[in-house]
Length: 322
Length: 261
Image (cartoon, rainbow over all chains, first blue to last red; front, side, top):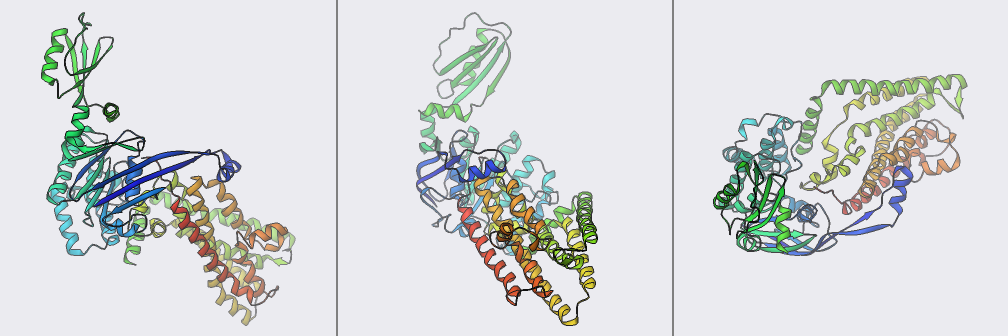
């Protein structure tokens, strides 16, 4: 469904100066440095795959998605999405793909959700019958019926994201590009969106490429993971491959009433322990050391006032791949 | 076509959500334009004419250019304010649709508050035409040609706006450029071109061809010089200029950088 061969995207960063003369000068100036946002990336995605595309901020994730969807032109390389080049056949490719940017809604901000759908129906020339089926199906799956007549700007972030997801599916595309669809959502909203994406992938056989900063998204949804850093692929494999590389990284924070005297503790699975006054932060690997066991240990060392489990940042996870 | 109407009605309804803002801005814009012309009239009354152009003749130029410019401001508001799409990275949203980004821009919004300026321009046109006391043939010719010159004017304004917007693909910001490529030439087009120094005239008849929107045809229609070419040039120039602007726009899109997410 998606083929990317030796993709390169280099940005020339010109020095910009202030004011009219300055901006005119920077227009003509040749002073620049080249940033390789995407540096010789190749991969292909088969029909029905659910691929997690992860990496730290600025790794080139969004740039890749923008090239795959035809928003950006390539410096070099070749892309085929559904057999077509998104750069040469942007409009045809646009009909085959659905895109969601978590950070930016594609809906008409001041209009009710229904109106956005009506406009998109017209834009993608969806037949009336198909459109009715769509509304029915997506009301079942995402419960968008409740807020169909509310202006988008008045929706909660979770509702808006459900609206955005439905809007991306209005023309029933085979391929979905999701750029951080769960960003900023609460646990409930995340759960319902994950359930929806899983259903799309398993029942409707949609091919999905997802970028995220949330490790749970990856673990619960993706059959395959591509990790990118500094514009290059550092890992392309199954969730199992990722596990082998990084284990199940977890973080536990324990606030003690008094700092324990025995702080020199060695346990298989603990990767790092840092003290901040009475607070202990433990980075550990859940595949080697179970959380209940660790909990039991930390209560033996002293009297905890508060214990918190935290998800590791994707940045920390990627550090481990090297 | 259906899509176009859907998009337009959508943008109108969005606009109407903020009624007070709409009323206040149309009122203030109309007022600014009126004060502008009253000032010009006052100056003309004092000096009788500007380099051989009397009040009504200048009024004719002023009326045509202000109708053309305000129509551009009404229909091409998103092209005019294109900077926002670059700075906030919103241009992405236009490129994911199976429709050309330019048609999406043109249907995204109408700035109805500028309609006040158009109406005021028409009023000035009517007053000027009555004041000119033309004979029947002259009047007939002028009325026939008026729509042509206004459409040419809108196309020239649109092309200038589009070229300026395209610059944003490289510079991100275009507010500074607009002063020189749009506001100053638009203002200059309100008055007869012969009042400007030679180098400025050359600019207004070449790279920023606002001289063609009203001065060239009116010169001939008011028997002030020129020949039939003066009537043929405005539509010709505007179509060629539009073509150039569209090519430049297409070229610019290839250089679109987007922003970080």
